Image (tube, rainbow, N blue to C red; front, side):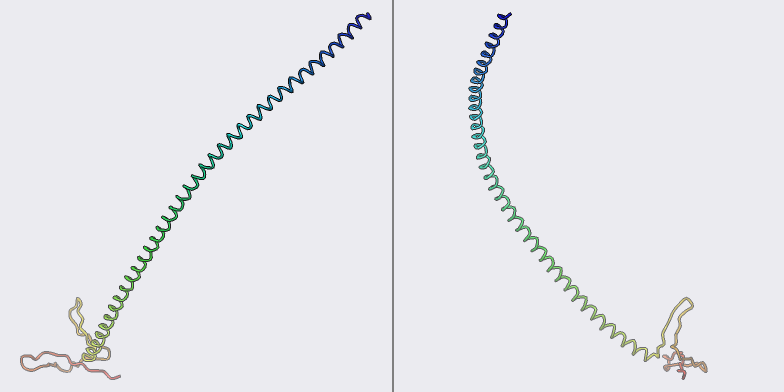
Length: 182
């Protein structure tokens, strides 16, 4: 049994040596593989960064051109809006001025018309007062019962006899009015 124990110890020792040598070989292989993967990754990073830089520079150029185009379009649009606003305000001002002038002319014409009508009414009122003074306020009225001579308040008819005015063929029947005294 001692040989078996020695054999087991030898086998264990060889196994440990083999394990150690395998570990060393794997470490070396993994280290080499790690370096090559790291180099490949670094190369990929540089390639990607270069592509990103190239893309960013092209994008910046494109954006710069787009920005200039937009600024030009905005400036042009701003100028159009200013012209349109100016025209609108000019139109509003001219229409307001025209409406004001038209209203002033209409008011002047109506004022003259009213003044002329007031003068005519005053003349007619004066004429009516003169006629009323001459006729003592006697008026004529017609309705379904016939034609009537209407006397003013405070006036009565003299019915003592039949009166006539005029002479000869122009003589006409008349009614004598008497003013009543209060």
